Image (cartoon, rainbow, N blue to C red; front, side, top):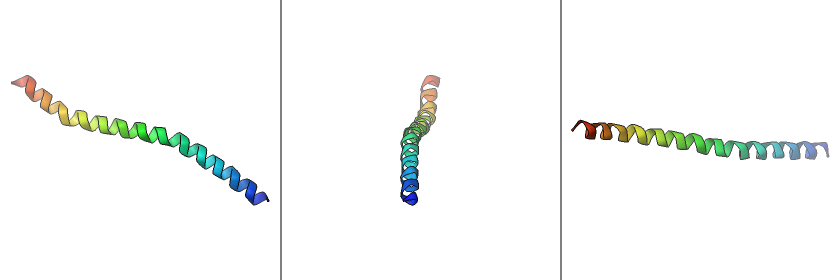
Length: 51
């Protein structure tokens, strides 16, 4: 009975932690992809302004 109680508590804690981590991971991935795109396109735009 005590084990069931603690198992439910741990399950609830893991669920809440994963629901908090998911948006943070998505935001980090978005920043990384955005930074990569800027790093790729910035030299092309700089080259266009030189000509």
